[in-house]
Length: 71
Image (tube, rainbow, N blue to C red; front, side, top):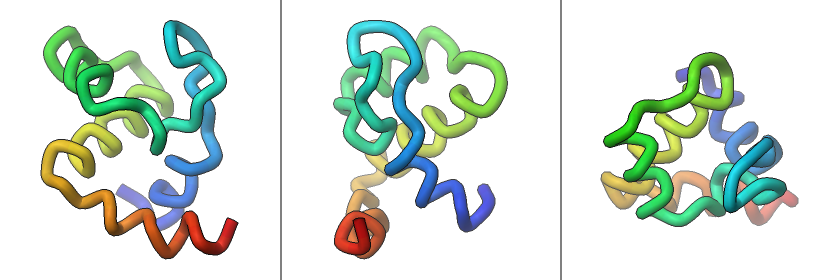
């Protein structure tokens, strides 16, 4: 993980699927869990989804609070 990845979770939008257009940081936990079970997509989106899943699964959402306040 790069430090700027946390910021990108708040700016990169899901490009497809049920939650298309929603920023990755706002995706629901069960949706992230589905990706964890079925496999994350290749590339940058998959890497960010995996990071968000780890944050959500380990209840570390507070990491994003200061970044959200800056927006």
